[in-house]
Length: 350
Image (tube, rainbow, N blue to C red; front, side, top):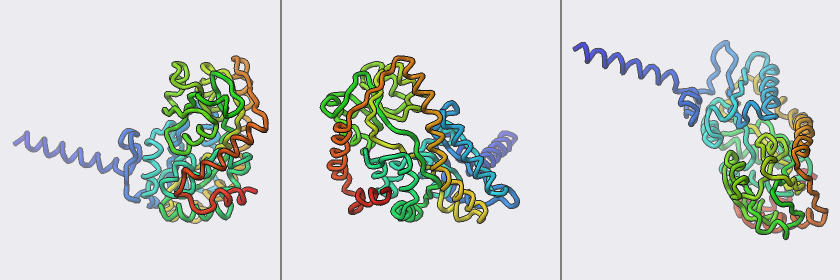
């Protein structure tokens, strides 16, 4: 009898514990966010509504402080209606899983790039097309353009909302052997993420796509599995890629965009003060982000050069060759894009 009573008490205790954790994306140890079916959109009475930002950045990332400041500015502008908290290193869950959970109503923010939204609105992958964006300002201008807002409406119908879209840095190649045109890049094993657009990007440059996770990139290059990789300078520096690859080739193939997304359901449930804070701070951030990126890139580039990195500048003819190849060939590989999408993007940022 005593054993039976003890078992019942233990079972009750476990059920209460599970119920208490069910609505927290971090309750499962950060492996995967919990799907709360939208319950997180309910505002606690008399308290600031908590939005947790699940950032891919580590606390040592040079842009982590900028992301944290962005969250603080929303909190401050909300007049006590919001409390936006940042969590580093995907500690609430993997990016793709979090975006899916957010689309179903989880009260969180996720930083990512536009390619993560292609499963919801296919046209967004075009925002990552090599040589389509031509300067840092194009990122924010495209997001806020008529075309950008048209796609945003489609995204809202899928349960997601972009709260800002910012320039993340000029992407170039850090490689073990220099190249200055498509012909010289031929045969080189160039690391990229395992997605359709990123492998197309390697094809545009002229190399052979070698896919692996970013965390495996240093080892892949040091062991000869890959001959180099591309990213903004501050990311290359933080990952210490300059220790194993010594040529920085300025292909300027992408003015990289980064976005932050939240639940459309959660946004619509918030009081007007909170909505206005998210909108105003988000729309003002693209211009500020350019200054923040430029501020960290200079010193890191100097450190890379001190370690022996050499800068390689392809001429304009080579840049034109890469650009023309991209414009002619990449759209053919994305039949899911809407009609005249590339031309509409060019008009939007003109």
